[in-house]
Each structure stands twice: as C-alpha cells, then as structure tokens.
Image (cartoon, rainbow, N blue to C red; front, side, top):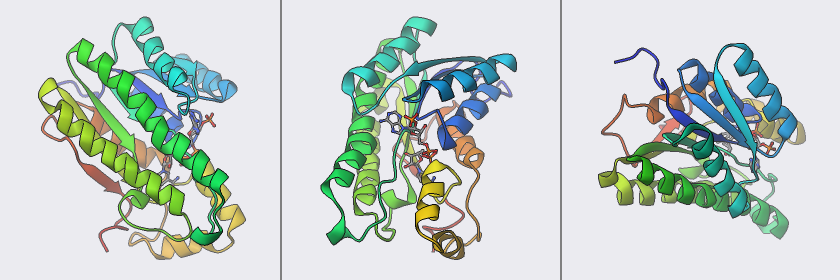
Length: 254
Ligand code: NDP
C-alpha cells in the first residue's frame, strides 16, 4: 500500500477557496491527489492552484456556485474532462447564516442557508454519483457539522441544513453501497475559518464560550478537519460507509 493516502485520485473539493476547503486542497494534494478546486471566488482559486503547482502538485480550478445545479454539474464535468474520471468528492461548500433567535430569523437567511448547504450538496451528489458509477466506484465525504448532530444556539436554519446533509449522506451510502461508492460525513466542531471569524466578530464572547464548552478547550485548525476527510476519502477504510464522524474535540460526546 502506498504511503500517500490519495495517490493519483481525482478529487473534487467544493468550497475550496478558503477555510476547511482550502486546507483540504493542500492536504489532499500533499497526499498525492489530483485536486479540482471549486468555489465562486476565482481569484482565490487561481492563487491556490498556483501555490500547489509551484510545489509540484497537480491542481486545477473551476468556478462553480453549488446552489445552481448546472454549475455544480459543470464542476464534475470539468474534472472528468480534464482527468478522465472522478474518484472522490469532498462536498464542503457552505455558509453559516446569521446567529439569531429562531423567532426573529429572516426568510432570506433560511433561503440562502438552505440553497447552499442543502441544495448545494444535492446538486453535487447527483452528477458525482453518476460519474463514479461510470468509473466503477468512488468515495464521497460531505461536510456536515456538530450542528448536524445536536443543536447549537441561535442558528436554526444552519442546524436544519446540516441535519439534512447527514440525511443525504445516509441515503446515498445505503443506495450505492453495492456499486462501490462509499459516502460518509464529517461533523466538525468549531474550526478557525471565515465563517467562525464572522460569527465571533459579530457576537463578542462567543469564541470563549464555545471553547469552554469543548472538552479539549479549543477550536480546530482547518487542517485537522481536512486530515480526517482525507482518510475517509481514501482506500484505507473500505468498509466504512454511512458514517458521520465528529471531529470536534469531544463536543458531541459530552
Ligand atoms: P469558509 O467561509 O472559510 O469557507 C466556505 C467555503 O464555501 C468558501 O470556499 C466559499 O467559497 C464556499 N462557498 C460558499 N457558498 C458557496 C456556493 N454557493 N458555491 C460554491 N462555494 C461556496 O468556512 P469553513 O471553511 O468553515 O466552511 C466550510 C464548511 O465547513 C461549511 O460547509 C461549514 O458549514 C462547515 N463547517 C464549518 C465549521 C466551522 O466551525 N468553521 C464547523 C462545522 C462545519 P466562495 O465564497 O468563493 O464561493
């Protein structure tokens, strides 16, 4: 067995322009993958692809808004047309939405969170699975959240959206298990990224509170989440499917 987890795997990463997705691009490429980076911000993607190529790694990008079905499908088509197949996908794109009590939450927050976090995963899963069926199998990791397993304060649409990601994970894992496609989810706890920087800037004291509620007493670096996704995507866990793996410093175990 190779020492690189993802050697020669063609891996699509959505939401690759920052945070956990950008960390995943670096970790997966270091582990030998050919990474296809998708997100809306072209400049960020281009910079990251340059960085990876300068390090001798294999990477390309495609601008794609996962909330738009045609654009999600185009990202998959791009990977297949560039590299001949799609082996793995990390459906990571997502937004946090406002932190507001449920009865004050506005419909536009609900709509944007559901469009990106739920419909976005739906839009990606279908072409990814079709491509993997054509290629004889594959591995998918969806990025849920601890908010896909338990409630967190003042984030009802986000919580509902991340529970839906768990539902899609279980449904797809069950349906395609005999066709060589594994589908798992990760449930990160608080991770230092643009989403949490925004939440913490607008809610003084929230960061300390979250850290105090986490058994390890800290938040995660994006790379820690990406490492777990890399392992789940890899051939090192061939009997693992339909799982939702908390990567949360012990938060949901309490
Ligand atoms: P970031 O805000 O740093 O990253 C979010 C990524 O998603 C960006 O690359 C953004 O790129 C992309 N994105 C957002 N909307 C779309 C869209 N419509 N189409 C394509 N890409 C999109 O935050 P994180 O790294 O934290 O978030 C990544 C995932 O991790 C999310 O699903 C989030 O819910 C999940 N998560 C995060 C946790 C945390 O504490 N940070 C905890 C648990 C889960 P662009 O704007 O260029 O499109």
